[in-house]
Length: 290
Image (cartoon, rainbow, N blue to C red):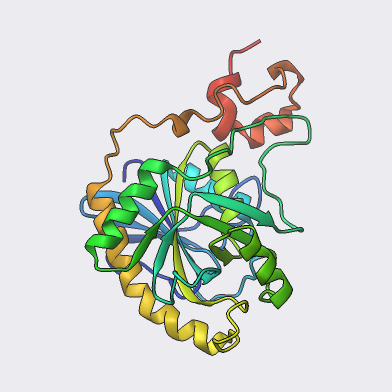
């Protein structure tokens, strides 16, 4: 199979992509450890695609335990340039009801215990994250969701919390005072690392419940979340298939060159082991440079 330019990360309740044809499982190793699961590769509408169950297909990995660097690096090994995330979220606004999809373009990071950069230990790079979502991929996904009949909202802010516990009521009200829109536990680290890996990244935030600010609603429980997750799964798959169908892989995208001016460490000062570990990401910028 030639390079796989489209990747899909499936979140809670979304453990497979049954629309994949010519399926093959691929176990990949990375300099950062093991990804969450084997990748399932194949084709959708004639385009090469790779699917990864974020929490493992048996849902055995907590958000804090996710090896985000290994997951993103493995997608890079496959050749992925467009990375689609499908994730369960809680709603922080009355407008976003369970089963709605939100396509955020901003993040607020409330995590504490996660590795979220490929750099450090002898190499410094600073990529821009002013706009952490690819606007082109975001619009393609939004249009596909609308075409699939899903009530959808374009734009918004995603609060990424540590978990695995859900919010306290005080936290939930705080996030609303910041005008945040949805809350989840996984997407910001993916967005950061995808930018360092020069991938265009966008999120389908699938609303499963109102966060606990909404006192007229029942407090969120796992049973409630699972029920809505099952309803969202088919809509997410339909959205992704339609998006892949219309995604223009020949389109010039500046995000595919995010590291071009980001590396500050001179090549001759980067430790050899770091050059080796990061060659897939930085090799084209430092090999042969002085």
